[in-house]
Image (cartoon, rainbow, N blue to C red):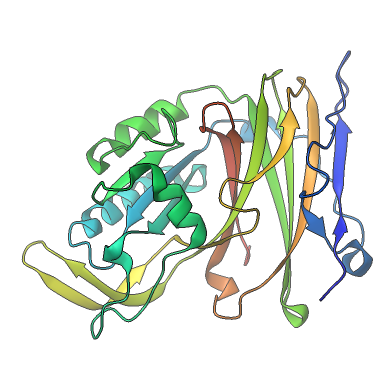
Amino acid sequence: MKKRVFILIVQALVFAGCDIIEDPTPELGFFYNEDLYGPPPAFSPTPAEEIFKRVVIEDFTGHECGNCPIAHDIAADLDTLYGDSLAVIAVHVTDLAAPNLPDFPADYRTTAGDAWWSPFDGLGIPIGRINRSGGLANPWPYTLWDDEAAAQFAQDPRAVLQMKLDFVADNRDLNIHVQTEFLEALAGSYNLAVVILESYIVSPQLEYLPAPFVWDAYYHNHMLRGSVSGPFGIQVASNPAAGTSQVNSYTFEWNENWLPEHCSVLAMLINNATGEIENSVETYIAE
């Protein structure tokens, strides 16, 4: 087991009267192998053109959900429309995502996905969340994803994130560095949640329209594979002042069953009082 060294870099931008953000979770934190990989990289302030509200769509789905491909198509259309400004997470949940031989041998459910689904236990899929608008227990039908995504994009950001990745194939390590900049003084505590997504996973999928049919070679994209920071993240700020920034770094031991060239890392800053996603950033490992 590699030695893990806790790293938390706190930076204050040049702002009169700004406070340093203190580490609120020294026992958990993000752990980075600085002995092996050296100091975390430096970040510059976010360029003006990158300061905007990004959107995360959580698409709760399952391979035996015959209506779910409709939601997949809507999410894909929004992904194409908004590009890097929008991230989709396909979260496989419920018994409709359980293995069912012979047609559905895989199990793409995750600990994080099950935790995210828990407020909806008893509801059917497909449903989703848009930046967790309205809170963790507020589901959005896929027919409204477009409108709510547009409403989220129209909001001014109160914080922005940047990310740098370094995949070390020989060691099966992924080094993740996330900078959070607070544009306004915010009340309350904020968590940083970091997850791994994978696309181009070929696996069966049931589809009902135009008639019930099992696709043997269906492409599953943006699939939630696992969490780096725990399902709801780790607290990184409490009552942050305007103009402060910090970097959190983590060395993640890569799962050999995931293809890094098909994977991305999504970091989400979460308002703990509301459960909503304040802002996010997604970076592909192969970039």
